[in-house]
Length: 392
Image (cartoon, rainbow, N blue to C red; front, side):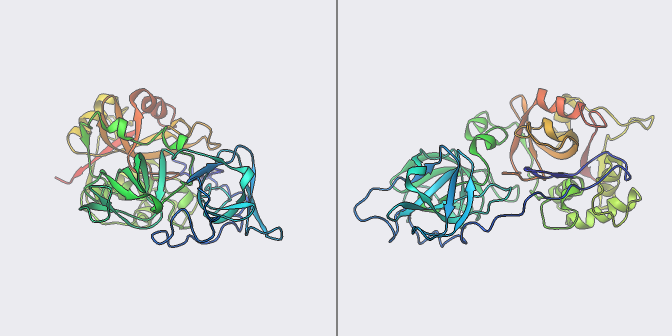
């Protein structure tokens, strides 16, 4: 199902006849130009007003227009709601040249021009994105040793800013040795395409990680938003593909989907969601065990928080069925159906998870025990889940 304004999510539990796919709303506006070579472009460029000290970041208190240029005859790209972050790159006579991060709804990211009186200087946002693949340095200097690389478009949390360098936390994606903390060139960092305040409601931040996760399994992240015809309904197969990858088994979400659709008798259905029994069957078809989906009497098992913790402590990631709208940061989502996530760890009284719908970072999300219980209880099959383990 497509969550209008939020992005697609798979409907987990409706019958094939009840499932349908909502279509996207307004198409993306022909907004800012393609991103520049950020490694070569600093916040103050040749377009800057000579001698003027430019703010590095700005926000718009009111709805503002993005323009194609500085002059009075410049075309209008689109308008942006209040509260967006802009990275200020330069200045003309009446407008700032900025980078806008987009909004995942109808406005693309890229460079544009904004009237100077439409922006107010802003502090660094808590979360930013990396404009190009960038080395993480141990110290705030280009010659310092590197500890890893942050890929282009990844989200990082801003921890400290000093002399053109930013100390940041990159959570990783389950494939590398992350999380990484280190220094990135400030001019490589751009505004995110999701409000930082909303990201903070669901992402494992530096403050969360100070509690040191008791368990955090390496479950490589995959997004259901892969451009496929079934992306809007593919949270379940994508979650299974992550379980397989965690155990070293390679299968694409498309391959998993074909198996799932065959098992539940809905072949070639692009807008069908997946039943959890079919997801468990596909998990086993690709070589793993799906543990504790059902009771001996055949009914779906009702997983408790202690059950979830026990599975994770045994190094078994868990696929859980939840109500989409009850996940952190999704409280206002128009979609009210079910969704699948992969639980990957324990931190304090909370759980870490991968969300295949990456409306913002999908890896390294965190949800409290009470919130997770509420989301599982409200699904069409309350407290349904299964753990993935190597075949015996």
